Amino acid sequence: MINMFEVVETNKMIEKENLDVRTITLGISLLDCIDADLKKVNENIYNKITMVAKNLVETGQEIEKEFGIPIVNKRISVTPIALIGGAACKSPEDFVTIADTLDRAAKKVGVNLIGGYSALVSKGMTQADELLIRSIPQALKETERVCSSVNLGSTKTGINMDAVKLMGEILLETAELTKEQDSVSCMKLVVFCNAPDDNPFMAGAFHGVTEGDAIINVGVSGPGVVKTALSKVRGENFEVLCETIKKTAFKVTRVGQLVAQEASKRLQIPFGIVDLSLAPTPAIGDSVADILCECGLEYAGAPGTTAALALLNDQVKKGGVMASSYVGGLSGAFIPVSEDQGMIDAVQAGALSLEKLEAMTCVCSVGLDMIAIPGDTKATTISGMIADEMAIGMINQKTTAVRVIPVIGKGVGETVEFGGLFGYAPIMPVNKFSCDDFINRGGRIPAPIHSFKN
Image (cartoon, rainbow, N blue to C red; front, side, top):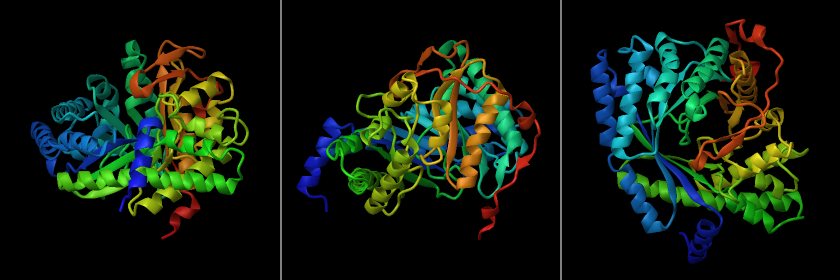
């Protein structure tokens, strides 16, 4: 039971500390939409999404009003489209028609974003996988709400370096097609190692093939709540620090659990997971970097940052699993640059570099996220950055990702404005030394020895 004290405490978190449910994400299986006829596939996809998700936005709004809990986004994730379009699509242009269909369906039901324009190629690429990947630049240019992801590696299979090389080229092509809008489409494209099947957060959400026909996943976030709690224990030892984070994460996850169960009941769709991720926004006080500073660092990026982030991530997960039996997705702390004012401040102060961010990804939830880089960065250099993150994920048996934005026509020292939740970002310098010969080798980096556990 939730008592009156918890209600008052939760209201304070919402009103003063930026607590929110970041997203209700409805996962929908499209496996029954497969057909050899492309027109029929598009028709099936549109009908399935608009039928299953017809009450999603309205239900979310009702829960917001009744419980007084902000639900920032209502989203949909679908089965990776490379699987769904494989029988019907004979060219990248064919896959783009499916992206257009997803966009139309998302607009019809009123969701903010739809994820799952995806391919899973950690060991090899089918023809359909490659066609979808090559269609991504045009698909993201033509659509407003479609998000795309590609899984390039895993602890069990190794890293598909052919796909890593290709994604460096695709990222630059995506940037080029929307260069008039500061290469904005790259914000909707992420590559993964060990991508989870039940991630509610964009741009990486897709409905895994191990999931049921439909599922409700909720992502809850509260960096401001954690920072406020830590401000009350300044100077205390690490035991007190850890207990404070853990207890706060428990309270935040309880809010997500409540919303998830209520949405599941009202939509008559099974509840999947609560993802407790400290996902920042550009709002003042809603920053993961500020939490690290509250731990005792002058700026994110100072010596000790990786240790502080490891502590934060671990205690967030420990608090979350006490509050819900079904904590999943990418639970932990995100460290995007453009969406976190504290991270932006650290970059501008010279405290935070791309190399330090990479080190931090060894212990955070995901990886290099929402980082603007010079538009003249070579495709092989981007592939090298991707390969490094894939290796961290593969060896450490964790999810890692890369979402970088090569801003065509801009360089180090300039700033790019994305707007809304995406914020703005200083363009960060990238190592100029070549990795061409390494990336051009082709083939696959084998799985590490611990992949053979069974």
